[in-house]
Length: 239
Image (cartoon, rainbow, N blue to C red; front, top):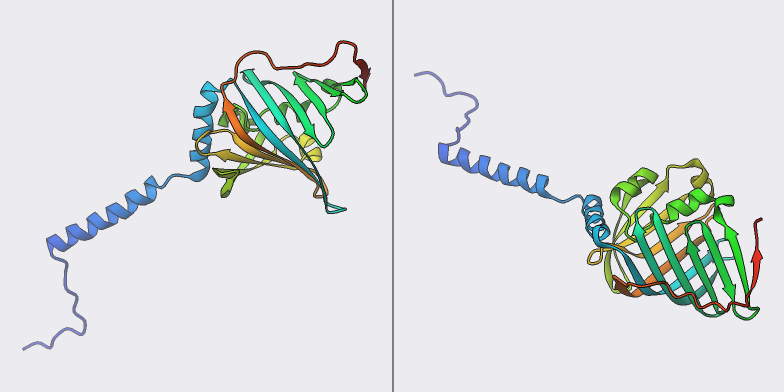
């Protein structure tokens, strides 16, 4: 009688082999079906952008000085209109601590100071127009293609901001001009609204400005309210 083999290996029965293949297929399908969180967030943004015309909201903005480790903040309201791609108009009504009104129309920025009854005007075509153009992409009706054309995008994680479940996106400008002034942006996109409920603009040296929006009302219509007295003194800052 021949000696038994040193090693024996039992072959799988057809039923066991089928079970193994089925389980492997389930695992492969699950891995393939797992959604990419960045793409899912951008898909939500695209759906919101298709019907976005404007919004009104309460806003809190914080400016952080990295050297002094101090914050300066204001509260107010904002109304935004986006009639077409890459065209945005907004009116910001600062209520506290120092009342002021701000309006952006195209590349024209107007700032009204009621205590002095003075309106300062800045032509942004003469001062950082590319920065303004890219700011207009930041979460108010913009599409994923618009963001990708101007920024390198990274997924920053899931967070909750002002009661909204959000996805944080990290944006690095592709334009050297913008990168030199604002090296990084962060957006917190609401999963339910598909728009930014928080924006953070980083400056060289660690300074940043962060705006958080609450009580958001989408689909606001009509003209932006700009109730500045006709006799307000006008000062052009960059002739």
